[in-house]
Amino acid sequence: MKSKRQVVSEFRRTAIVDAARSVFARRGFAHGIMDEIAKEAGIAKGTIYLYFRSKTEIYKAILDHDMKALKKSTLERIDAAKSLRDKIGAFTLARLENAEARKEFFRIMDSDQGNVALTRSQYRDWLREPVHRLASAIEEASRQGEIRRVPPEKVAWIIADMTRGTIQRRLLGPSDTSPGEDSAFLLGFVWASLANEPDSPRA
Image 1 (cartoon, rainbow, N blue to C red):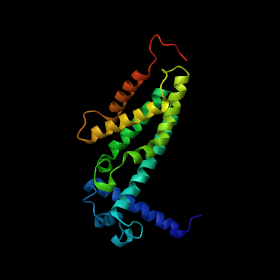
Image 2: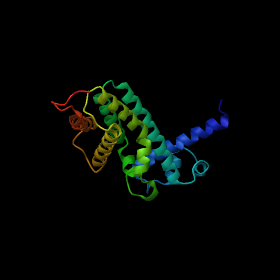
Image 3: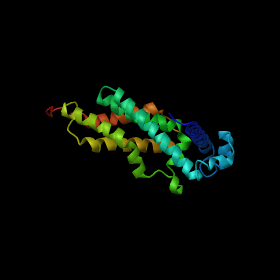
Image 4: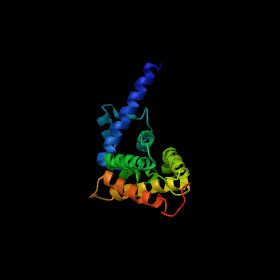
């Protein structure tokens, strides 16, 4: 059982993180000040410093929380899908929908504002488990002859990188396509490259 102090601490940290997420999305990282975060959270500014030393530390807490939540939902959607084609679609759609829902925050995450930018190493760390889950499905489909022989992990990372590229393009400005349409396009492109050649022997 958690103590009352632990429960209060977790509640306040969550309130600060949620408030900061809203402020950063609305004002941007550079203009999102501690006073505004405190007002949004309904606490005194000094209280924030009992839990976080800086605005950057709050930002990293938001990023860590949101990426873990995204990883969990992506894994659930991959596992719920039956076929490899559906699993690839579930992976791309989960990430595109999440980026669309948090578009302003993702612009900060993908920026070059010093130490708040998302590095490729961090990106790969957060994606590692979903990509490995996708790679396992690719390997199984290849073994059963559903698709041609391919290096599973390499293909899974290519799918992840193509999805990230699509997210970046959507962040650059208004898009005339929905996340679902972009996901379907990616899926069609990937699936065409994985399909067995007409004369190739099945495994």
